Image (cartoon, rainbow over all chains, first blue to last red):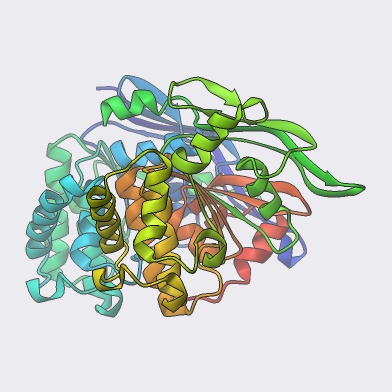
Length: 232
Length: 264
């Protein structure tokens, strides 16, 4: 099967205007592709640009050069040049993302934080809430917490809410930035199961994981990001 | 969703090389963008950046010195705002557009009842059944979290937050497709702001409204908008997806704005 996500020549440099305009090269000529059902793990020490690559695929960071091609609905969309409304549509229908830290509206209940991506309108909301509840239960978030905003939760609980939010919609591409970092062994194993289920359903996954066991369990391909180190 | 998408493929509002001079002073220069149905655009910048002038140009309250604004009317045809007849302008102002002012006193009639403030917009578009108007007004008051028991009170007896919520109800009762907002949370206490933002976020999503929101508050932009335009000295200096511009700002001025926010 052909790739659903394909990066080529992707380069990124930060220019820090407030620090005298210094240039911080992040990555250069990133190239890899991911097929449906495949899990690609980005490997390399911290500071080599792994998270920046995920953020560029999600459209959260700009891509200075190169192409990030996503196959969606018989169309090829280049995230690097797509208009904002196309990227918003891709996030709704094609690309899910579990960030390192939960960033939620402070007053929104955990169950709604999770249900939100599926609840495009009030009609869909009740159904989405029920599904969100099931997933939260599976991730060992007690029901008494569902109605509370996750800001007061522990780091591990927040991360599981974040995982539930990212895993609830069934999208063809899933980006995972250290999804198991602050989890105990039982929950880590659960996330490995969830990833395996996604793979069976044909989701193309790009993940950053530092835990060797988790990487071993989920990776079909390992991409060494140090290959894309930018010349300073 | 599918039928909405085909309709959404045409922009609702288009600004082309829009500019406004006051004598030798340039308030706003060469602004171009397209706004699609359901899209929320935030215009951010400091006072004097030209963002309020831009809002007035877009909403036909001010005539541009250069460029043009066009709007897709309900018949699907896009028309230059400058060429509209009086009846069409009235239709836009009374029905198809909303305008939420920073100061609710500018958008409300302070001496008449809350119910009349909301009902008035309906009467202007031909509603004449008192019971139905009152019912629609009560529904909207409920929707913006104003107690029905206050329906006969005039907004001058309301708190600032309630006035702002009433102004929103008055604007949305005619089911507009586009709403302009000028610092909608400015001048309110932080807790009141938060409640208003949550309300706006819910309404905009539920109604699929397109909106242009002028704000100096990047947190408001992040919460409410899909896209952002950063203005400085009357010009748009950076534009893009909201989280992209705020998380990966490119221009020096945008980096300064973003770095000036206190972390939550």
